[in-house]
Image 1: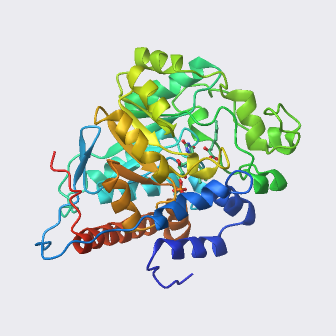
Image 2: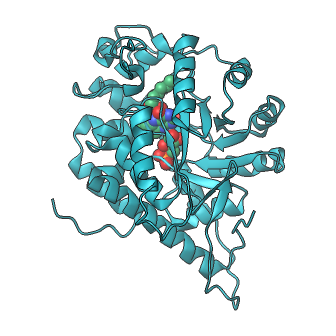
Length: 387
Ligand SMILES: Cc1cc2nc3c(=O)[nH]c(=O)nc-3n(C[C@H](O)[C@H](O)[C@H](O)COP(=O)(O)O)c2cc1C
Ligand SMILES: CCCCCCC(=O)C(=O)O
């Protein structure tokens, strides 16, 4: 289908809405309950105003920064989102290639529809491509997002595989003891299309057995299975989460992971200074300020409003990242000005993937890079990290 090239991230959303089947669109778009937090993540950026300065030489702007010790081309990275092959057949591989071309960081979801090994290989092929001289940074930056299963052997298997494949950090998502109530998914009895699987939980090597048998979310569809507290009607996905993942998780899990991996550990889903202090006490290496794109606790404050107290509590001891509602170069500028080391994107990547696969994601990220650079030039922001 021929499309006019989108000129802002919002346009990718409109295009994706017209292309995706209803249940995939609803799954990607939805947030918890009335989606107050989904909306507020975006609105809160609009409430912040900039104070531009003038007559400063802005003819050269370098956007490079360091995340967890790795230099990347710009502070615009990709958050983990599950099931990317619903958007495009090349799914997570396409995202990995686009990020490798942009020389920026991708976080792969535990719940990817492509195995973590195949995603890593796809990204490396691009990173090793000598024709990409424009971006002169060496290795790809790829982190693995972890959901902790009740079965710690399953969890450990994922961690060891990610480490072996060369993922450089483990991003432990801590805001999902249960799945938020996403009303459209409940109505749709959302489940994966039959040709797709949660690939990391399938057999991944010669002679290896599947970690838990093929994961069939339809078994859980309709809410006949176990339920989260207070839920009488739930989606297949939410029921699977109750059945398989560990709602009893505490900071102990971070110590257990630390004892089992040499990868640095980032906790994703911290929203308060109190938890940021606990994260430091429990020796995490990085913090992602996130409310899961408003998909978990409806009414939680926006991430950009949560950021300053967390940055203050962390006081430079570890890198602080942010996601949720980032849609414009000016949003990125505001987040960095308030102390984030880099911004991560969730839904915009899914929209761009739907639109045009790898090329779409690369285009969308380039668009945000251009917008961010322009914002720096017009505001004379001092947010370039030389270190
Ligand atoms: C469809 C979808 C799937 C997601 N899957 C995951 C996941 O597997 N792991 C995770 O930690 N976060 C997941 N998230 C949350 C994102 O990582 C991120 O926090 C959020 O999307 C950021 O908000 P934004 O979509 O407004 O950019 C998902 C979000 C969406 C929209
Ligand atoms: C243990 C929670 C699994 C959720 C899987 C995907 C996801 O994060 C989402 O928001 O959807």
